[in-house]
View 1 (cartoon, one colour):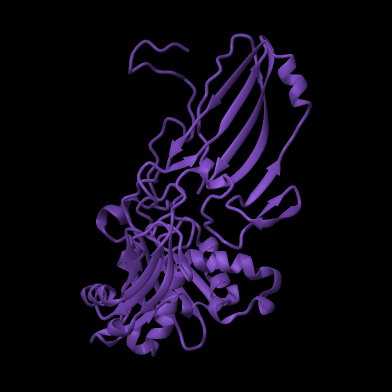
View 2: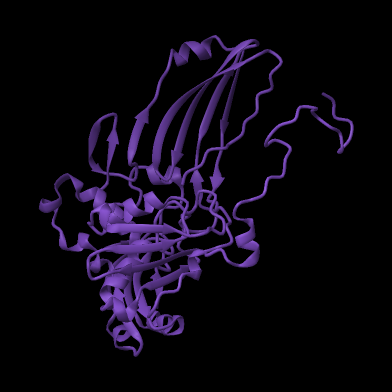
Length: 369
């Protein structure tokens, strides 16, 4: 098989799929406008939600006053982290599940601290988006601005500002006795690494850094929720993981998954960024608090800031992997890869067969959702 021009026929084999232009099953609906995306959901008596977000990357929340927003005509509900089930549960009631549920609840809405720029601190539901926007501006939040952690290596250093003050490192099955920004220390080993390096003809070491990135989908995150009086919760959202959203919402709201139905709508791009639930629990609580479902119908949110890349400051170092490879002229590449992502450290081993004519490429194609 040779390539001599852009029109060169590369194969004479007739395949069923390869080389064909199959009709997209969703194509007609999309080009005719029949396809329903998350923002297209329309329910009777629909309310519109807006999320108030922290302008600070790291700040303690001293107080939140929502009284002016609640008094604004057209506002049907205002919520803060105090409305999440976690706020009414004690450490004794939750036992060993306390820390996990706190992290999950705080991810939806900040309770005692804002942990990243754009962290939700309150939300409003109103008769239209303009009223919701005005009400959001009336919410008064008193912040104590704290030092931000913006570098992975600095975050792991002794004396660094603590993001989660209750977090203790889980290291090789043991829990540290003092707080840290390092969630876990894991070790994956295969074979004799030091012997492998000792036998190497060439050893290549690299340290790589990356900035925080975003998938760049066009459609913003969105969510519509209807919490009925019979206890059933319906959520319509543009998601790549309907079951992941259902599990996350049921967990944070302390509901059986059988009571939560998630309908995935058409998605305007995701690329892995629309699996985690960001707005859905907030929208559900607004629907519940807004009152009679016959009047409110549901609550809709379309939010450009509800996303999976946390904004902290420009130039955030999101990942710092150190790579050390050994290459023998013929046989194997053994890689020992140490990775630090968002303060979590892992060590992994890789084994790959190569020949003496193979090229070695360093491609930092490691990412986190």
